[in-house]
Amino acid sequence: MPRFALEVKANMVNVSNLMPEELPDFRWHVKLKCSNCGEVSDHWQYVVAENQSTTGSGRGSANFTEKCKLCSRQNSLDILTETFKPYTADKNLEYQAMIAFDCRGLEPVDFDPRNGWCCESTESSAKFSDVDLTEREWADYDEAASAAVEINEWQHRFVVVRAKK
Ligand SMILES: [Zn+2]
Image 1 (cartoon, helix red, strand yellow):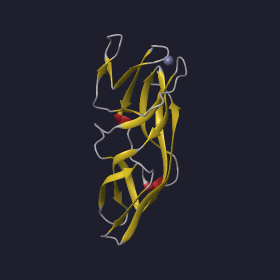
Image 2 (cartoon, helix red, strand yellow):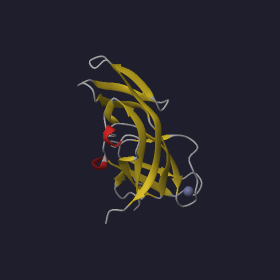
Image 3 (tube, protein in one colour):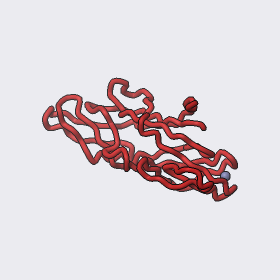
């Protein structure tokens, strides 16, 4: 089954280690495309690592299942939390793979970061929570280091990675 990695690129100003505050229940908002008929959902849906729903066939479960509105095929997705890596300032402004999804019958075509993120200062021991990326940028102030902190120039893409054998 194809595996898709979410790659993120951003400009991290005096911060690093951008990640969801709670990885298990973070809502990854995505737009999904049915691989069978090409239908793309017109609204944002979210997938959550700790959610489990049974697949239509009754065989096992997945983090997300959906019957395509157009072709009625049962599609599903699993979040591979073990692939998660925070976005670091070491490779600032470069695409970095953040997390991968195992997809059966669908593919993610867009992502919306929204809120629920956290990151750390690179200039002090300050940690920032409630980092809201709804506008795809964020700014705060690191008082310990007297430095402005920012995340901007947000971009993302999905790339196919080698399926697990
Ligand atoms: Zn379909």
